[in-house]
Amino acid sequence: METRDDLKFQEFDDATNLLAANPDATTVSIGDPDETAGTPHRHRPTEEEDDLLGNEDSDKIELLAGQKKIAPFWTFEYYQTFFDVDTFQVLDRIKGSVLPIPGRNFVRLYVRSNPDLYGPIWICATLIFTITISGNLSNFLLHNGEPQYHYVPEFRKVSIAATAIYAYAWLVPLALWGFLSWRHSKVMSMVSYSFLEIVCVYGYSLFIYIPTSILWIIHIEILRWVLMSLAMCLSGAVLMLTFWPAVREDNRKIAISTLVAIMMLHVLLAVGCGQYFFDKPEAEDASHIVTSIINVTKGTTQSQ
Image (cartoon, rainbow, N blue to C red):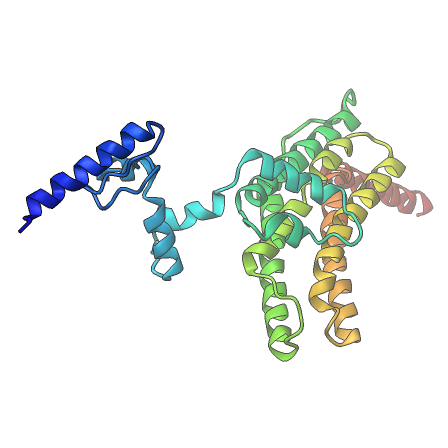
């Protein structure tokens, strides 16, 4: 009676004979059931390697399961996500804000993937300083050399410009977001925008006024109005092309009224800044008033 060891030796002899007959034959080891024929052994990463690689699989599983933790709003990590944008994205959005193309939505094309506050905040801050510095420099160049003119920097205009520009860049989007959310609850087919996306659109739309305010230093009234009109048309077109898809499904009168209100507020900001910061200084107006009073007084005295 053959034992198990005899059968093993017999199988070994048969395999030896087969190898002798066909030396090119491949063999399969059955000692390790985890290994397959012709498949190299794969290296399994250790825990340290998982940490270095970021443990991407676990992050995906956690995200798909809806267990991704969101930092509380009072922490720095919460607001850090609003500034997670690189230089190329900011430049691309600035280019899109000064070159509106019909049929291309600014939110869908540039913002929706990653809306940010970095660009809007710094654009508004830069516009505040350029418009105040350019206004002061414009008044200085206008009256430079006049003996009765004494240049005094008007630092209070910085706070006025900051109030006007930041109020426009934040309060107008807030009101518009509330109105669009209310209308979206009544007309479900309307396109909806988040508050951050609207702020992003308004912030980037103000970039065109930075070079425009610098060119306003030139004392040619017609040129100033041409530059102002060009800036209003370009930035206003970005707003119109962005918010038209959000209101076109609404009532026709409400949609047109909304776009008209958006454009009127935009024009009011541009014209108001141009007239206030680049108008003749108050000292000159006061001198004209005093001169007029003196002339009237002299004329009255002579008539008497």
